[in-house]
Image (cartoon, rainbow, N blue to C red; front, side):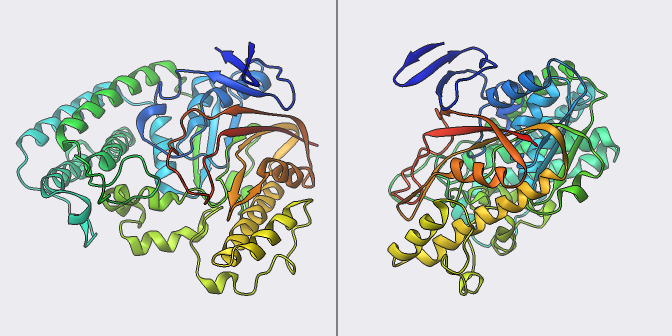
Length: 442
């Protein structure tokens, strides 16, 4: 390691021992290797972080159980399985959990090759689509050519159980092909590829990619990587995926599972609307979990920690003066947002309040599921709300400590690419540093 620009430059594995409060500049090319690169997903943390925690705290042992209670697209789960451990992922977002499942599931490669050959033949000869989105404005989001080809492709994937059976190995392959299909949708749509918000730009016209060519390219990549993954991991490892909020009862979700290590990155305050971000994908795959229309998508937003989509009635009776959280500095920040933002201060103060309140519930819940001396590594980024800077990492640390956790260490790393490159014009800012909080249950 060498010091550079107030950061500690790290090339290769992150060292086991890290100086408290240090900031690492991690040189890594492993962000999209293995199955990590299957599907674009906002605000992923780099695989190096769970890899570091696994190597440090599981001491090379195999067959331990790793929990990620905000698993997103499965970065921790992939690293856990590759290291020879059982994994449990919990997330409130069904598409995220589906991506995680696909990225961590071994496949029968001969069966995949056979189904893929049938699918490719159908793509080349198909002339009539077998699926139609329930979106009335689908023509705004996609060209007529893209709609026709996506319809054929999705219809073929739907036929797989009828053609190849309803057994588990066929279902796993169908899931992989659906995620491969989902991975191309934003790129073949008229919507901007980089923004967190799904919208069609009227100032920068996009040239969508071609459906069939892009899908076949993705399928080749998926096949190559899942083959390597399937050959690399122990087939006896257990994997569990739970669709739930981590502010809800984790004991019910986990049962009697013994957790040896927990690693996660919870959502930023008011930073990402995951459903809005996935909107065009959900038009085409959301029917698998009743989120195929904007109305159904909007009805689910209240379940997401950090979400800002809510009716006025939800926060009408809230004020930060009458509903303190009792955390040094945080209540003052909530009051500042409430008082200084004349347009949105009431809503934004409540959004931040609810986010931290939900994290309090989460730490209370997860404490009951972890044994004494189990480590919980939490990656968070500070945020700005209505122009007020929130030291989120410090506040999360206080919440964890008053719920029975000891902070063993804290350090950070520079974010190189989090699919958050857009300018939020003061409405959250570009988050430059992720903080790694290393807790241990007392």
